[in-house]
Length: 134
Image (cartoon, rainbow, N blue to C red; front, side, top):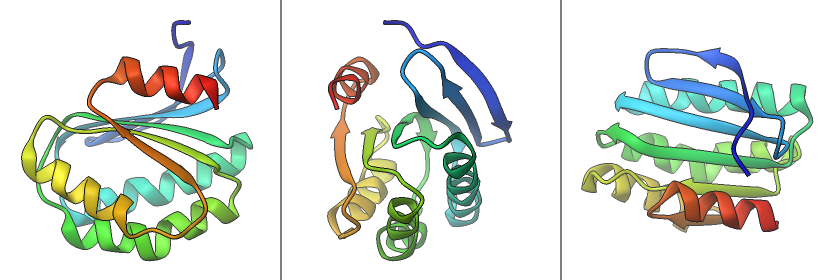
């Protein structure tokens, strides 16, 4: 099923859209990320997840570069618990092909105890298929 996207937020490093066909938020990150841009985007996601009353997120990192280890640690310790409180239950994460961004993503995912089911993927298609089944 193709995505039917309505853009809710558009910034230099992140576009967040609501996917009407699948009832989830789609995050399309792009460019070189740093801790500040990741944290700003994450807080925007939190706000929009509450607004849209969604329980699923498709997080696409295929077009990013950069190392954001501090933001990853903040994500696992602070952000994911807040996201869970806001109603998120499934988080499908597509890795960047760039190694440093992959490491940052792994750091965020490995250490969270938030209760959200988080799965990581190498391709957007696989990530989408998994999230549709949840």
